[in-house]
Image (cartoon, rainbow, N blue to C red; front, side, top):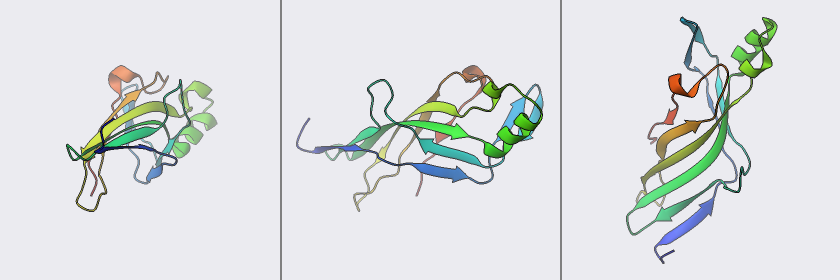
Length: 132
């Protein structure tokens, strides 16, 4: 690692999207209710970490996250759905962005989704858009 790079560990991430996202299942669209995104611990030896590269003014991070839809999961549970449908969606978020003048950074990137019964990878996409 060069002198103009700083490695960092991410120790906490928690976000909520109150308006949720649309879920299309069996040709019908459902309101997910609030979407909850949380960082999960180290998986398979890869920590939640990143690097600030001041030489290129770019920041990069890789995080293990889980996304859950508590309100929608409760509806499915009340209907007697298979518990596999209500489990949180696991993902790896690989993101990058510019290092700002105040040394902050706004990351964006796509999520690599783990298999899930309700949200198959081939029909599901998740990404973090640039923030301000």
